[in-house]
Image (cartoon, rainbow, N blue to C red; front, side, top):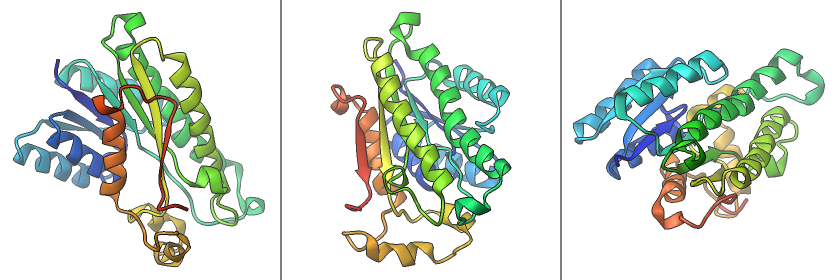
Length: 248
């Protein structure tokens, strides 16, 4: 059976690095993007230029109709899904809780939490041996912020990733006898452009000295953890977290 991976938020950063790495390992890759059409197309071109297969689909994981369309496109292009990477996530500008409005908090939770639920739901419907599937693996991209809390910056983001952590544990146990493994990676300070939306362009440089390894990580380093978790080498690993945070 062909290996097929769907990566949400796959146009840049950790998602793009995972897509490129998965293609090198023989996966057909479907990546979703919300607005970065050119970046997503470039990832697809890079994969195809190396002899791989890839498809980019515009979809907002916070919208159920978009999620249904995304998974249908994956089915039509490459057949049965074998791996899902719930990578799409957002944060807002640095803020204390007393200055956050409901719209901001709801948007963060809708994308980071509800989006992960919806995509995992569609993956389970396709993968579960209970439903006639052949099994598979799900990796949720959480954050070290779920442990640290992100005070004074992104408590809403940290809380959303805490929800992703709990979801990971619960879903892993729920589908453990159905051929599906569910794990998560918690990246720390990583060199991606998600920090650009924080309002502090030099945030990585400021925070990196707080990391025991004294540097920021790369998207490729996080992708390597994700790709291991979906691989056969991790066949007895579920409900588990890899801390890709340099010891922080």
